[in-house]
Image 1: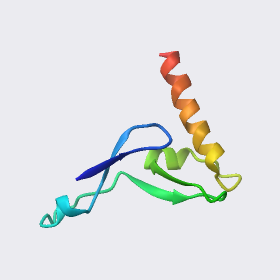
Image 2: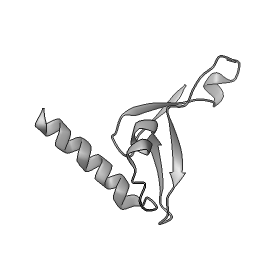
Image 3: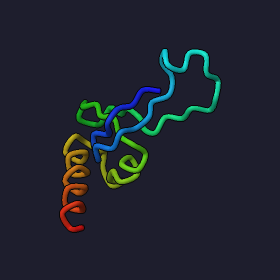
Image 4: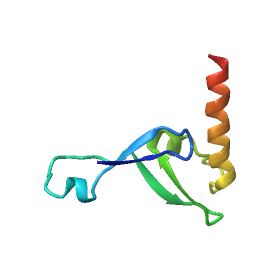
Length: 78
């Protein structure tokens, strides 16, 4: 199974499918989605970061950058 880092938090997320799973019919699940945002930018985000995107406007690359900044500030607080 392949993996890709989340553009919001940087966590490595599994991506189902591909040649690695050619003969595997198990319930492999993807841990995130590639999204095209309102400003035309594309980002791979884990489901937790997707949930943290704003609901009051169409998300943009700026909102994804804010997710990363939020993760950095939480790391420093610990």
